[in-house]
Length: 430
Ligand code: ADP
Image (cartoon, rainbow, N blue to C red; front, side, top):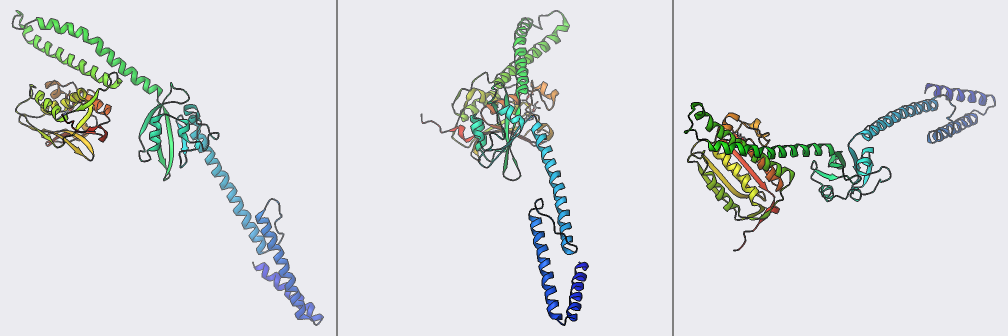
């Protein structure tokens, strides 16, 4: 900066002095300033050209402020280049990392078109990027469940199982996740092995339960033939009833395991029909009163709607029986049990609540797992197998219904079964 002042001052002094010699100081001063201004203007112009096209044009060759500007521009330019390089490196690394992911990832545009896809998306779903860029993903994956998932903008987190459009033997679990505000990304995971293992587990349980039934039936038959009182040997008098009881328990368990397998494999098709839930609940209450654990329980039936349900009556009866029987089995004599049939938040609700001892909160999440029991000693006393609630969960799942469990120690437990609006039907005019 200072250099510019000195230079200008030097030019002015020199031209003033020469002007003085010729007695034309003002003219000389004016001419010197004019040419200096022209020179400066030329340099600024050259600077502008260089900034616009640094590769084609030369930088102005001047000392002072123009040179400072040149150097500053060069510094910022270099900084930007290295930053660009760095960001480019990050982007490349990120893209190759996502490309290498085993899950198929497709970034979707506003209209469900392909914006970007990784390598696995090509292998799993046949979505090629950049070839398929801007093609709507519902033209590439035509499964109706997937189309529904894609259309439902609010249901983020929901997953659907579809067969791969490339290879139907590949089972994909697809979900759409939200990112950066309104952005949508499709994530597909290969579940073939897991589905296979689940099927093997289900088949194994079903086969073992089936195979064990025959030998157990033979044993139970022979046990029935023995009568403890007739036996001469004293030790048999205690052993026989215990053996009979345990054989009964085993048979019950096998029966429940088989029902659970049938529900899980979907081997048995749903026999949906208009069902009078009020009548079904009355029947279940009558059955509950026959249980040996029923001791003057105060069972109340609250019917708050006249609607019927379009369900498999046999399965729903077995599920609700499990809930009501549990309420009788796990509560003390004379305990109040309320069974409600109502409509809540546009959903049909069958609710079984009791004022028993309740269940500690940390058990609730695992209650519907097979063989999970809160107090196995107590459960065995009442003849429980630990499979009842697992059956309830599966029956409800098959009916698109949801089970909610709430409980408070010392106050009681509530099992609420919510059925979707679509299952509700009007009571027929008979
Ligand atoms: P189980 O055949 O043992 O009854 P379930 O799956 O039906 O198996 O129930 C799991 C466990 O949940 C039971 O062992 C019991 O401890 C607990 N349970 C179920 N219903 C109730 C209830 N109404 N009150 C208290 N505990 C309950």
